[in-house]
Image 1 (cartoon, rainbow, N blue to C red):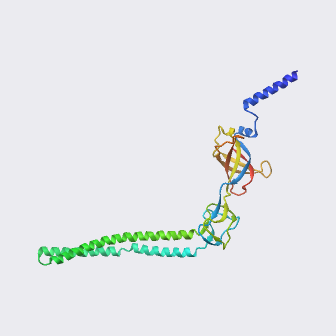
Image 2 (image 1 turned 90 degrees about the vertical axis):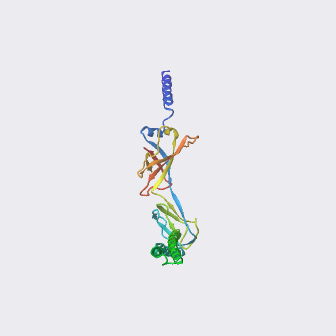
Image 3 (image 1 turned 45 degrees about the vertical axis):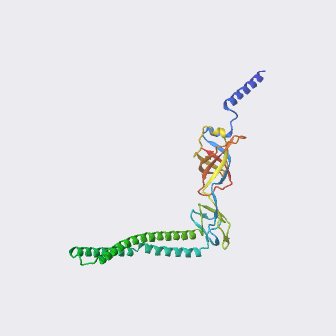
Length: 300
């Protein structure tokens, strides 16, 4: 009987402990006791990958990279036939230079201003002469001199308006030159991100159309580690931007660590298992971490 009472007493104590703590202590809960959370079996995946398209129709003349090549954002990866586009660009440049010279030429305006000065001077001399000698100049001649002065003034206004038109024409030619330059640039296949070329879809000599995928690039210097965590552990925690350590091959001689930070905690909770998604961005400067790897994540 004493042994039975002792056993009953022990079961009672255990039940009270479970009620007080809310259930059995999991591995995650033990980690959280040391101010860390551990998520086992996280999946490493890509944050960004791009299928780089052709932007103009034509024959692919030159492929400048191979699979496995590291490229920087803005690098030219391939070249589409651009001979006609370059000729049109040269033509547009020459037309713009001609329009610019015409815009900078103010000879007509200066000539109109000088003609107006001469006409005003002639009219003034005629009026002065009439004041001294009333019949020295006929009324018809005086009217002609006034008309010449008025005409010269109007020619100044006309020269000013023509200068405005010429300036706008120069701007139009400049715009046409920029459009022609853009047409040349669009025949270059340019990398939109920094990453690694992993697949070439189009080979030299093949015909491409706008939207056709030429090659595929993966961004590997920063990857995502995504896993699931029990929502009950997040009630009083804000994990956003917390530092993390990703462990590949944890507990073995081949264990490798990568650093990063939490970038997203899903606001949705799975009603079946009470888990939510968490992912962190992991720095991968040496490109040793690969998409598809499974690892463990420790959130500090």
